[in-house]
Amino acid sequence: MEISDLIGLKEPLTKLLEITEKAFGAVTKPFLMRMINKTKIKNAKDIEAFIKNSDLLVTYRNEEFEFINYNEEINNKTLLKDDKKEISILNNALNINERSQIRLNHVSIKKQNNLEEIISNAFENIINDEEVKNKKFEKNVDEDWLNNFFEYSENISNDDMQKLWGKILSDEIQKPNSYSLRTLDSLRKMTNEDALRFEKLSKIIMFRSIHAFIFSNRSFLSQYNLSFGDLILLEDIGLISTSERTITIPFNEQNKISINFTHKINFLVLECKVEKIIEIYKLTNIGYELAKLITCNVENDFIDKAGEYFKNKYKINNVTLANLVSYDSLNDSYNYLKIKTY
Image (cartoon, rainbow, N blue to C red; front, side):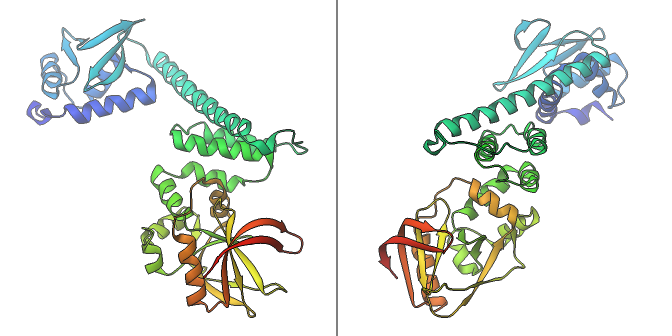
């Protein structure tokens, strides 16, 4: 490797140091030397030239690293600034056991901070829920479930994802067995992009009995910025099935059924004398549980468009937008106020 090959490497090398600090808690002199040894550069003058040409925030003179552009030194720690970013570097020459202990302490503190934030979010959910007050909780949260919850969530550092995990914990305290271990496992593997994609899907989800689904008509989905590619990605992480393409809707003795939406008291009442087979993509059990968790508003015009779609596509006799007054789950009957008919 020639020294000239290293010119212009400031940004990627600085990024690497930032990542190292996040993983280890700090960059140390011995570790810097270990990285430089990977370049096969042995001569002290060449190492000094390498540092200079790569424009790192350190210099190398007389076989020693010197740290530049620091803003303060506290307890043998130097904070280096670069474009308003800081990199923590320990000045003393620690052995590998000492460096390992620094990393373990750093990781432990991060995990503890993550868990405390998630539990604090759960606390906030509970104290702001009027239905919880004076409520008796006869069942305890399963201990194995809790062990898995804390093991999975201790690595969650994104603010939005921490709020989701806090919501899961508060829900589980109020109603144990609300979320399966499979759901927890899927959630911990979700990226921010996955979560945003699923949130977009949640705005057009419909519920009937124990089923959650969306219309499978692609032109209908495209109105809400959902592509088939989005659905495949959500299927890859186990949230939806594109192979389950239909759902049969039987009507009760009153020739009526209800279609519900995410976090809405408004719903559709379908009236028909014969059962209907609806073309859909069905959410998996994991997707169903997560759909109950996501707190997002239904797209403004979606309920109206869904009502019109049921009416015109499937020749439903009457489709009514209603507001729930009361519901009898044993007899699947409900009292409601009519808002409008499609």
